[in-house]
Image 1 (cartoon, one colour):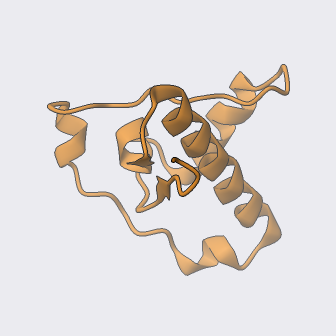
Image 2: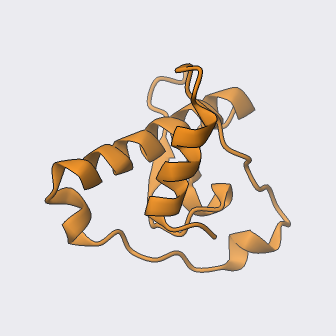
Amino acid sequence: PLSLSQAHHLLLARSDDGGGTALPMAKYPDPILRIPSSPVPLSAFRRRSHWRRLRSIAEALKRTAREEGAVGLAAQQCGIDASLIFIDGAVS
């Protein structure tokens, strides 16, 4: 799995067109779903540059979930080693 920093750089490289990028999403029984994720360190919330990194990953999780028709997903499902989830409250 990718670190938060690696995932952010991957998203930047993919979004040259400015349209945003969805991520590949693992589904059961993919073995990546059995790998425990790492907690997001508190330092990620203290610096503006790290906060932007988290925000871009959260936006990609949101885009991915909506494109896949999922109500939510974990960063780990997208190959990112972070205890970070997206749950869509806008689904009716």
